[in-house]
Length: 300
Length: 300
Image (cartoon, rainbow over all chains, first blue to last red; front, side, top):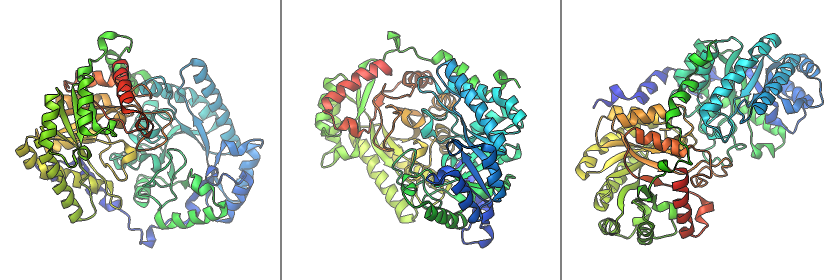
């Protein structure tokens, strides 16, 4: 047996060495103006406060969650953000295409069309899609509905000038949130849809564990699908499947390594911090923002 | 765009149709003597009680956890189980090969050697391996250590007549329990190790979400690696990452479908129920056993 010749894991390890990051290298540290925050991360701030505080901190952009737009004109919020010097990175989130009934799938399409219009009014070039999964039907059926749903939206996406970003979610969300759980699946879906109006959202929290991640990041970038990059961390002691993400550096994800892989694959966009955390949400959001700035430069 | 021609998910769906189970078909129901329980599932019973109650219920086998052997002679427990008419399916569990230090890796090997001896004394043909992952080192490094650890144990496995069963764990355990998270990875590892003393443990809880599962089950069986098959269910509302598994039928895993795939791939062994559940553990184990018998025939 010749392990060194035959082990795929070891081959991957060797090919990664050039990209393995040394966090003490100041050259590798990103500038604050490459950082973008999701409004959900500082969810106790209304969107106007978020815009003002993010801009004050020197961030490069903002990703707006639809909840934050309630009762507001997306066009005005978009203008406010641009005037503050923030790039509108994405609107979060559409998707959830899988449903047991035709009526359910139609309702999802209608909602995604509204989201595309909102994104266009906002001036956001990307609508992030959580693919969806319907308990009570096989995952492969949900996968087919996701593909059909995205295909159905392509004309509107093009008309709005808003790209659709497929976000593969961690396998622990396969039951009811996403039947797309690896970057390979998302890439395959992009290949099948074959449209410049579809791309992929690479979120380290969902994908860090995958042995195929480096190869699929390279494929994603090379194919022109790499539309967004999301940061947070995986806590060793995760107490809740939804709202217990870590701040960068609190967990075990090789953040800088993945960030360098994404950039080596041609990604030149902002780095978006998306943290769902009851623990951090219980803190003052100003302090949380300060902790994010420090963690971003230290660990990403 | 020709979705129907190009979608991998839809192709998989079609190829699965022949194996999709109709739970109302009595022909598909397994016999109780195909059922095996893990002692951890009824953990408040000591191993002698477990042997007696499992045999009384007509089960085909028992998988013994090492904790249950404490202070006992494995040989005597093995004899007791065989006399009661139970097959000794496996010993759980060895593995945990990844460690930051050489001393840690050596300690793991020593412990696995003791486990192999225990399995041999017990008369169990398989030692289940939880591969391991060491927080603080890259996953690919842990993967290399897992491969090296298993390779180092092969002579003892052969000498003991006990096979090593690699169990890929759900990606949510990648941080500290297993850097092997898909059946494809476990199959690749078997291919690299190239020994009849290594096989794979297919556990539906860990693998059900994977779009490649049907193809990798077929590959696993065809290659002669399919060593064990574990059952439980994934709850839609999972409250705890470790001890909140469902009884079969309580969750969303297509259990019968996967069982039929495993058997179509040539697996003829027992079906092992391994449920970690604080909720069920709080019940009377006799009632839990009864619920398992009913759920097994209804859903598996």
